[in-house]
Structure formats: structure tokens, C-alpha cells
Image (cartoon, rainbow, N blue to C red; front, side, top):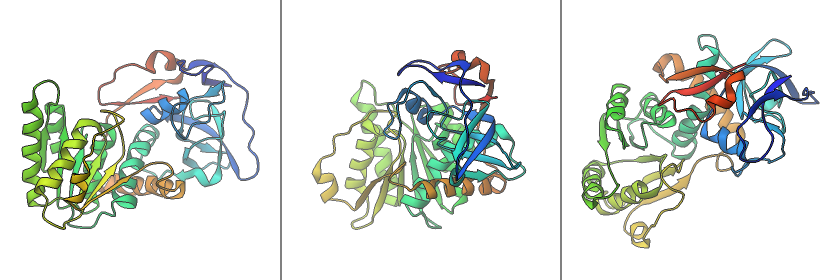
Length: 322
């Protein structure tokens, strides 16, 4: 069969032949229709993600949408290595399949699953969002951040604050439900960091319950310091770290923790059970029609995987069509 095959660590997948998968007990043989490209998928294909099993050659693709042998249309996650989602067929544990409801097309179902799962798990499983909570999304212009804004509103947030580096994109996020947009520029001049902190302090002084962070790095440091300086005494702020696109590490003074009620936690594989992550996908699919979730997509034939793997599609998520 044809698949997106990674022959060596760090190599771009190539459209090539790979052996056929065979389903065992408790597994499904899935005829794949589509598989989305996410940062999670890229890092697993490279063998650099902590959940990856670097057995080369392997098929790229951590998830996808396809049809089981008995005719069910499903979203599937984490196929059995060395098989992946970017292939004509794959094999996956039955427990890792979620039925896709009518009303969601294949491309959209694949595109929103990973970022939607990430946002839902952070908001529900880790932060324990309640109706009336005020939520700040740091990095709200990315795929997961944009969905997090929409899902926070769907889950009952009374106010959503969106932060990010792209002013134009932030305005688009406001159109999707964000009540406040705070743009920041932390490169070069110290005035950018100061302006960002001052804007944040105003929001924390009025009350923020949850921070969902997709960036980490300097912006996360500034947010935590703003919490320490401006949040009401004793008011807990649940800070959930999800992604690190702005840097793997931060500098966090102990005083920031001692002088505030920050509850610091992470969200991802292992901090959230796979069962709960798959349930999150089901929650996102249920919300899709009600909340009119929006996400830009870019469909590409799987045969073009090598050319499209690192292509810049802006805010649109690449989805490979098998």
C-alpha cells in the first residue's frame, strides 16, 4: 500500500510503498480517508516527542479519519507502530476510535480533533472550567488557541481574553468570541514587555480564573508575574501549560508562587489519560454544530506529502487526503 514513510529520524516523509497492516485482537483495520498534520504529528514522526516510538522506517500520522471493516466512520488516534495515519490503511486499538457524527465532513473532523482535544482537555480535565469563569488564552491565534477561545465560550466562560503576537489574527479571534484581545511584542525593546504586563495586570485585577498557555517562554513569565502583582489575594488562578512554541524553559521566581494563588499544571498525554483525551474529541464533535466551531483547513493529496510537509499554509491546518 502507499503511505507517507519516514525512513530515518529527521527525514521528511516520502510517498512510498509500505507493508500492509494486519489487525489483531482488540484492534481495527481502518481504511484511511484523511489525516491532519499537526506539530504533535511532526514531532512524533521525527522521534522527538516524549510519546514517540522511534522505530524506523515508520508511517507518519498520529491520527486520522477513516472507515472500519464493519463500515463505521471513526476518528482514530495513535495507530500501532510502525503504522500511522498517513496511509491507505492502518491498524489501531478499538478503544482509540471515536465515531464521527453526521454533519462533520472528513477534512474538518480530522483537522479539529487534535487541537480541539488539546483545548478541551486543558479547559475541562485540567482547569475544571465552570460557568462564569474568566479565561485567558495565551497564544490564541494558533489552531488550538483559536478553538480554545470558541470552546471556552461554549463551556460557559463569561469572558475570554485572547493574547498573541499577531494583531490582525487577534481581531479574527475576537470575531470568534474573544471579549478582549491583547497583542504583544517581546522582541528588542523592554517597553513591549512592560506594556504587555500592564495590560495583563488590569485584567487580573478584575479577576481571571483560568490561563491556557500555548506559548510558554517569555510571555508565560510575564503572565505569571502579572498574576502575582495584580490578582486578588487568595484568588486561585489555574494556569495550564499546553504548548511551548515560544520556548522550552522559563525563569520563575519563587516569590511569584509565594505571593499568589497560582495553581500551575500541564496538559497533554500522560497528564490526561488517553481515555479522557478521546472523550475530549467526542466533546468537540458534539460542540461542533452547536458552537459553530470554525477552523481553516488546507486539503492536499497524500501523494504530495513531501512537498507539503513544511509548506507555510498560514493559519490553515494541512489535511492529507488519501
